[in-house]
Image (cartoon, each protein chain N blue to C red):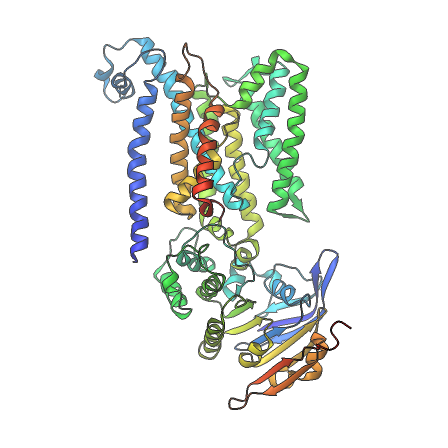
Length: 351
Length: 263
């Protein structure tokens, strides 16, 4: 083995050691942040209660309820949404061979926003289905609808081509954005709800929302990890990949469909959270190299951590329990960081 | 081994190949030549199943090309394509290892056989010293050598090359073609090389096929096909053919019509 591959492995080991310590620690500490004061040590005792019945003695019910049902649900949801967006972003960049691709390139986000706007304006948000508001369901339906439209438009003579796909994504997004603007102007009252939703937030989310995202993330990730080697080979271009025995159209369709469903589920519960899916894959590629077998799990971990930290900032920076939309925080932090990457690591980003 | 009969093929609204017939036996080394737009690349795309024939058939080892599953096809034909761009900075060794794809099962990691094939391909192409360099950081000629190594790692009996040495310097061009000739002789590889350099083809390819306007104009042993008449017909330029004293290689000199160029 050459020294270079050994240093690659050491980096991988270092990454996972740091991530493996950092993510649980961050989850614990972030669950202790909030207007209702609960120390990290008490959070720990509450979490370990099912394992050790004595650990939660002397902790009142309110603290227990807030930590378990409000904060932990939100922490877990932030981790899942971040992992989902980073995974989907990595796949989009790998399949579309476009360094600017992110989970929303194919119009999934505007589709979701359109579905959500319709639901908000139609007043359907009051209905409940299986313990959930209809808002995430409407958003999910909108996202899937937009995706199908883009895939339909992107097919040229029975073949899905990346350039046409990206163009179709832009067209569908623009078209749906116009409708969202129209819906907003039709009803001034619900404007702030729609805007807040579009900017992305995890405010008031519960374990129910975790249950929406989880199956899609798990199922989608299984499909994606099945095709990690193909993802690597696609970087050589369509024609060479085909000549090496990859069923290019089929593989690409499955990867995009899986990544898009993951995105749709994430957007349905959190609204549009930008930059995680764009920046994290670049960052991890710089750290661990471009091989997707390493990149994808590491990107999920990094995306989860960054989204959790951003969400904690979003809910704790302003006084009196006021929240900044999470999408605003990720954009404010993510855009300068992406600029830094562009300026200093231009070659690596735009290879 | 490879049989192309009455092949019509092209792109939507733009037919390129018209009634192409050719047969290549196992162990042949064939040079495919012709001016720009004559259909050389189209022929290679058809031979790898990327373009479907509009009419006519292509068979390999008696199987119709369309009937072969893609991985099966890739185990029979490896290609060094014109497009050398790789979008992410993979180490060159990783790129060569990708050539093993059609031999690998989905649930199995790389085997010892894969590792050996990769190492041997890199030794043959002398790319071992590039192994850990990012493929996006090396020169065009070096990248072409890495892609030749990738195709060799694919370990297919047929090797197709599309302008595979165009960015290499003279030394590496000759080195690569010597390697191909060696593999043809020792391992009975069947090699089809599309190239622009008539003289390089004349030295290394015992058989030459000239395409023009999507049809085969000449096909035969290099010494018979390389005539001023054929060359002028194919390239629309007057040519002189001569034998290099000492080694007997037939070479071509295209006479620049300096007098008449801007008349």
